[in-house]
Length: 355
Image (tube, rainbow, N blue to C red; front, top):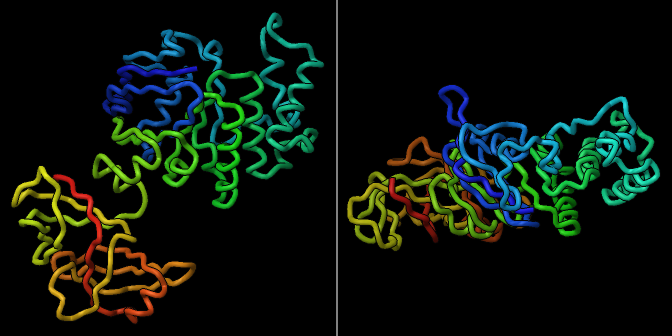
């Protein structure tokens, strides 16, 4: 099923949760709605599900206006962050619940329900837990059961609201890989809400970045990460080091310091800008005679794994700003970096936006 939302507006009193949002979700795609808390992503998901009504705008399912269609008639499966399993029911009965609650004319025979539930439990690799109760399961197991229950009614759309938010980091990583594989098997049009950048980039076919009720950028994980359209997107997707300054010829002037770097067309001398460099796009210069770059003092050197992370505090025109640099361990050893050392930071790559 394809989904379209057209000019969706939703307010709560004076607060605008969604401001004229329009999006297309093609059939069979797994899309992440990504953004900080309060950006409107869960409100949009609930409007698509029919759990919330928009003040204006339309929701189209396969091209038909479903804005006034009851949630039961939208054929949507919904998975919540906190599982929402029935504690007094076994795993089997939780998964069977939606099928047993269908109107008598649509309800399958009990024999077919039992066969379907066993197939779904095998699909989520938990058929051996059919007789257990939710309190006897781990958080990851409960979330897989919640997903099986949502799939039992054969939804045309699967909506997931922070599905792994209540789980610890290791289980969350395992489950998102599992969700990607499951989606590749089923190809149900799926939308999931998350504020976890890594989760969205790892799992989704496309990512919709949202902030303050607006869509900031839409694209594949690689597109939004490598070619962020706005300062918000660049700052939200992974660690970044921001530099506030102005254009000075073929360089940036940051306070009293200079960052030599090719400036893209569209910027004029004196334009105020904000520039971003990711930790691996910054180098550390230790030569005391070096005048280019931003001065900083090393506060910590964290050397574990293949790379080392160096945390620094800005000096001079960037006093009070914190920086993070990622170097190879060999590079750190060659530079003989130590805590308290004064150095200069110079980017190999900068993404520059008008301020």
